[in-house]
Length: 438
Image (tube, helix red, strand yellow):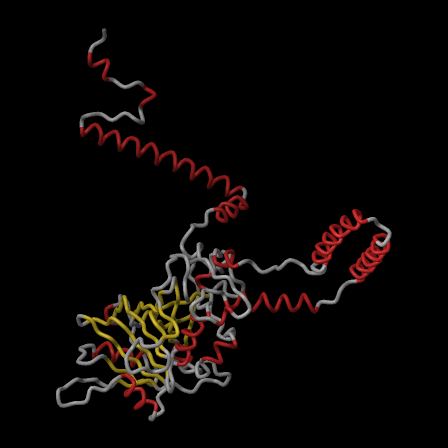
């Protein structure tokens, strides 16, 4: 028999599963295995880089395959019927539905070609001959003929689609899995007719009037600095303190909205507070509502941002990104009504409200166009290719603040005495993580 030392030594094939009892040896073995694994990956990566340098098509194919599977790519949509896109509680892509309807109308109105007309006449003659022959058939043959006629009807139904080409539009799942969907701008001209009839003041065909916004806070609030920063963010806005002194009248939101409506205000913004921090934002669209309730998850003042700039009094431009459902379009039109239609371009200020997984990110920047440096890359589009016409131009951004992250929680009907009595839409009822409302 061998010694205990020779018996405890593992075989060479068990090098990966071998685990020594000594802690220092285990650490050294782990480092050795990790270095070997890293060297293999490095050799594979450099080998792939040499092959792709010889054949650039290999890199394009690899990048097409290596698309990360995120929640945005897994986004699901509700089934859309004739008037489903008008409902606020359903997640449907309004732009896709509009394009599908337009494509179907174009296909129905498309004239048939001569070859298709000739095939129709030949099929009609064959059908008439079958009818004449079926008059001489026996009872058993008549039953067989009925079956054949049913099959023929199915063929005719298939032939009704003979002149129509397959829809070139991608499906809802394919559109959701496109890597460029999260950064696309919102088309505000795609509002459904029923939604526009339900909220005529938000979906008016005429250009919106210049905004005039009244900003206030909750009772006995301490967020005076944050409320004043909102007056810098929204043009033509005014801040009025709201108190609950024992000798003063505690005005409700409905009374404040009536006061503001009589003085030609277009919106009332109420900043909510929790533990001396901004916790919510209530926006009342005047004169008749609706009322939007948002919760704030992040608020950073402009002076706390690294490398921040100072805002000027110029009216900013507005960018709305990724609002695609009826509820999303309603929210986009609300923010559209709070900014003037004609910005001051010489100020070079832009406010961006970006929707990502039903979270809204509000940022304000100052931009400048400059020449591209030698060490910088050219501007590329969503397909990864360089954009023509801007090869030597780059844009510089300076954040002005405040940086706010918030989420829509409820849309109330009109202007109510107490919040949440009747609502058009209420969040928190969805159970599927891959279904988004905006």
